[in-house]
Image 1 (cartoon, rainbow, N blue to C red):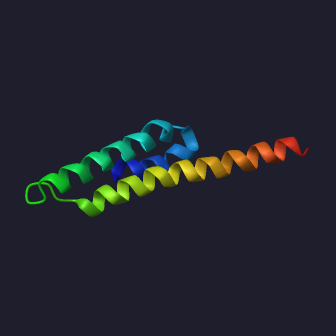
Image 2: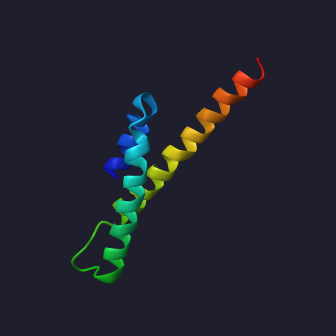
Image 3: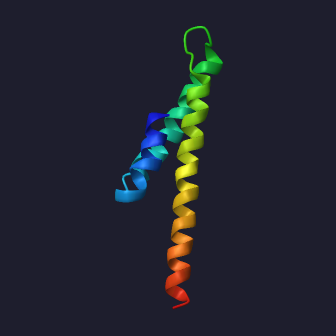
Length: 76
């Protein structure tokens, strides 16, 4: 979840989110798999889902940002 939040807040200003976003998605999936296999030992299912959601959210925001920038440059 921390990587996902950092990708949104830090990634949009200096493009470090391109590394942090996929890391958040991958670590969230690994966390969900570990929680599914042994829920008594591994907790944090909500944090794993939040990490996946924020990682994907960064890519959605980046896509919208690039669409706007490219759209404005094409129509000028």
